[in-house]
Image (cartoon, rainbow over all chains, first blue to last red; front, top):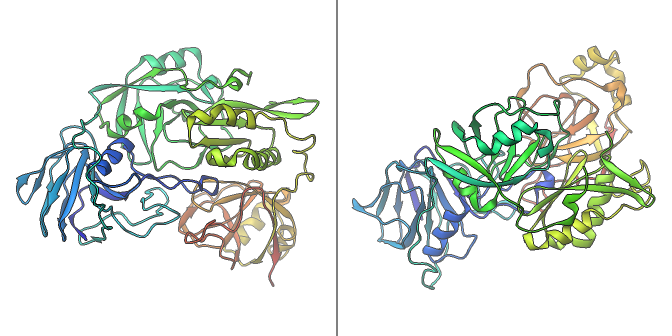
Length: 295
Length: 218
């Protein structure tokens, strides 16, 4: 069992996400920094998909009621185990009753805590992830919560050190043209990729609203609702783009003018308000002949 | 605007990229979307993480981006002639839903439409709806087919929470609320069937493409 003493601004249980039900309005959820989450599990000796704790801007305290191997990845919040500094990106060991405290990270937003055996709350539709948009999955963590931990594997950690990957003050994020890229005027399309976009405070697990020179659309009006993906760069009428993250709605009516490349989505998830992102247009990694069809 | 090319073999969808592992096919209408979804699920369903119908589109998300070419081929396969034509492609099941027409917005609907409250059930019931697509919230299915005589706008101010089973209308669509969501549609009745059951798989009673007929439970 792990006891939540202080959850910090937002702490949730997250795993690799809830797949296969998007056509019924059920979103994916899952860790927004999928890379940091996966690394935490490898360091803790867990198989991919084990549930971990996603902490937002540190400020948390948790007690290990049983001895456990654990690992911290993502935003490097200063961590201490019973008052002694705890390492980042390495396997650590907590004796029975040890208290892990996290301060506020200097960089990044989300810190992942994986515990050997994984957080063993009951799954909903195949996932232990909290979907903050729909409320599916376990409730947001609160002080006093007791989280069951599964049986730890006897295997060694699959990694022993991992470097953090966090966005610089101006981070370059690769993106491919979206299905509605043609809705941008030529000038707006050039600006989307040339201009650095500021991350606003309107950022959460659903998406990140960016600020910059408004992008004009060739098509005004609304789009009939269509399926959405994480990384979709939507353009509402305001001309200020929104990048969807893990808890995005399954369908939406704003045109998707670009899609962030999956390997760079963690950078968006870890970018703080005030930091800037520059989109770099890249070709699609796998060629598909049909994209040449005229729309 | 024409969104698909019509050839001698039937409509051929236009396919767009949507990120590293997804493709979005554009079609002419909802029935074409469901016809293509059924065909794609049959042929390459095992390659897909998600297959998400929209109002005029079908989003296919692959488990492995290396399969995208195969996914693109399946999406671009011309539909059978007439597959999208109304009434021809009965791909979905027919589901009957008993409704108590006791909704709190019946008076307001009467005001908008000029149909007296006591006649609203007769206009709404027994009409075949089609589950077009889901969105907004888990289990929130948009049902096409509301008779034009019942067309109403959204509520001027949405409710903070609408109870599970509330049958409501807006535009030319009906919905049965899954519960726990806010809502801006006019509630005309209530269904007792458990439509949203997150502990079950599938968690919804309806699937996209199903046909739904409301029956007056009085």
